[in-house]
Amino acid sequence: MSLCESDSPTQQDYTRVNREVIDLLEQIAGAGSVVVGDDLVAGYACDEMPVADYHMPEVVVKPGDTVAVGRILQLASQRRIPVTPRGSGTGVCGGCVPLYGGILLSLELMDRIMEIDEDNFVAVVEPAVTLANLNTALESHGLYYPVYPGESNASIGGTVATNAGGMKAVKHGVTRNHVMGLEAALPTGAVIDTGGKFVKSSTGYDLTQLLIGSEGTLAVITKIILRLGIPPKHMEVLFIPFEGLDDAVGAVPLILKEGSLPAGIEFMERDIIGIVEEDTGKEVPHHDYAAFLMVILEGQTEADIHEQAGRIEKVCLDNGAAGVLVPPGAASRRRLIEMRESFYPTIKRSGPIEVADVVVPRSRIPEFVKQARSTGERHGVPVISYGHAGDGNVHVHLLGKDLDPSEWRRKRPVVMEEIYRLGVALGGVISGEHGLGYEKKGY
Image 1 (cartoon, helix red, strand yellow):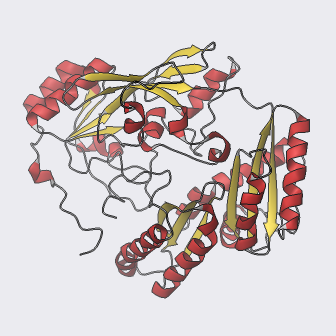
Image 2 (cartoon, rainbow, N blue to C red):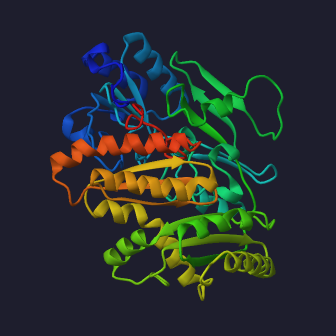
Image 3 (cartoon, one colour):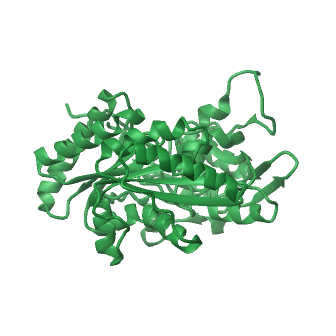
């Protein structure tokens, strides 16, 4: 049996939404917050997963507060109606897609920043607050939320539900490192509070951490208490070409041993650089080299940044780097970051793709990337990889633009399964930051 086959329930195992249920939902959330009709709910039938797979909800409900969320969940449990929580819909694994129809519980109206507590370095937000809106609000308070998954329109609730990571995880960690407490509604309708505005606790089970990354399968998160920091006053980006991926990744532990932790260390190879250049018509510096590191530095003074950069430059040159490019100004620095951010949307525009975000021990990245590429070659499916060298998270893309559609559908799950098995064999797991959703559940 393929890993993709399972004994999951089907839509027939649940109760359908009828007029009575819709009336009850309108009593709970208000008539204007309950949406029915295929044309109206179609926008909730998929997320940004690369292989679109649409599943229509029977009804979309947009509660405005925690009490309404709890009452909706209680009703759904009593009637055995499936509920799928949804934030901004920016995930790529189908986690917010209503696979079994039922109720699509959209939290989009719960978008208040409830408190910014400067003394305790805390923000209290509702789940639909986006990263962009939070960071804008924090600027005037001189505070900073450092988690940066590369999608500023992602909702905070969604990043908590998937334990999102991103390009700054080397220094700042992932979402779970910055969540101090939660409010969440259980399937029974009961509402619980976990954690709080305190740093230490040895009191009972850590339910906060249990809920983070649970992707809506245990509870619906309705409030988040976030740990904040002080924004860096200076930032720099180093772009470092190497003759091969082994040398590039081999430099990473040496950089980390230098003591000044970079915010992030990204790796990429020539093939993805070529795709970006073709898409944008703009040439990337040193594009003829085989592999590259992009090191993101943060500091409170220019002297801090220069000192970090000098040490990293020496380490990389000693490990085979061809040179170290320092962008000549903020605009050039931003272009490099935007180039890295553009990888996924650029590849997605090139034709049908599939994406994995396998994480392996840092030292196994070259071996994983090479074997993943060989797996694709064996099946006649191009595979390219890039990702977060500082934490071992590799984004693997299968490209289907040159394959017949039927051949692509047949080969894609076979190659994906082999790549996942490879990652696990090298000491990793199948998702480092995207989550499982339903797309990866079978694996």
